[in-house]
Image (cartoon, rainbow, N blue to C red):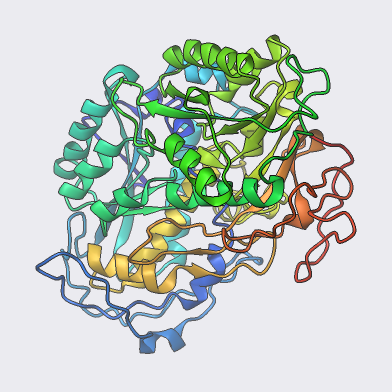
Length: 556
């Protein structure tokens, strides 16, 4: 059997990739669990010659191979379809990174940073950061599984690790040269990673290389790079719409804060809600962040939807470089405290709360914190790292589904079916679900694989309508390259057991019922946490979901 894992020869060794994937865990671990449901419909789309002008999506009919799908998966809880193929000509080298016998996918690692690794508790067993050896083995395992369970039309997919030689201080400039090297050296068809780097994605598009992003990105950015960049989460535009709909419909204008700390200084509970916004304005190297406008956009949405005003001085930006962010967040939280902000909307990355929550707690300042789901800050293993006295006052929205047992998850079962002797490393979930999307597009594109046929497959085949709290609504369209389309209401309970057996987990309101921006019920001031957790105390639970596990008693 050929080698499972190919290392990029001009990049740093895999041994240097200590926290790169963790930096890129701003993409979801478990949101795409339900994508496997759609694979039964993943017959290839009909091939259309690549257009010579700007790409325009044209819907395609289901082909005859739809009826030829058979279930040949070995894992008992997995249901999927691998369409038959007669082994005829696959077109050979149909696109960059594609030959008659192979398809190249590059797993890109951002620059290392020891401070980030330290803030996240280090690496190794039981940690959020896996060792380089664990990650290499994980990629090897999943390369085997996906090649066996998806139709790739006579080609084998090779997953190539590429680690950036840059540092946080020069990451934007280096990442663009990385994108060129990924094209010239590794001949990539598709890249995973590089979530927060606008220049990296833009350069990949110039090289005609597809990419899957794990973070929210602006709708305008996707359109500028169509059809090359697909997101796992919603666009920043939709995410802000989610948040504004939640705040306006569940809390309402002119409402009183009630979920902050009882002994906060200054007082929070019983005070008219005064909002503050915190968000990343600059990249680690000082260049403007792709998120530099989301704070003002959030304030604009609140004003437009329900006439909630946020003072410009309470819209606080910070750097994605943790060395700079620590001092910025400290001064920013002091300003919010001074201004008597009762309710903080955290459009944050998942790293900054490790020090911002600690800083506010040290001041005796315990405002309400609105969970927004931005950049994976709603993943429980990350939230367990934050100051729990502070984070106990967190509630809001999450695009992640209600979490179940890790061993019942698709990523875990797929790993175990290939290697039952070890367990998946901390990076396994992200790696698996990024690859699931990539292979879904490859299989759906059919034998003649190009950027255009891949995009058509993503539009036509990657579609889920939520019918349970464990299933997000997920789809792409030519006008929206973000994936998730709905969210649930959650609150953080420091004493709730999580799927990994540790204390600290998000509790779901109404058993995890999922809403879109247009379907948030208007029940201002009626939000209830604890046991039960619901929108209306007299009407807990929504009709089409069966009861989930009983929420743990407690409150934000």
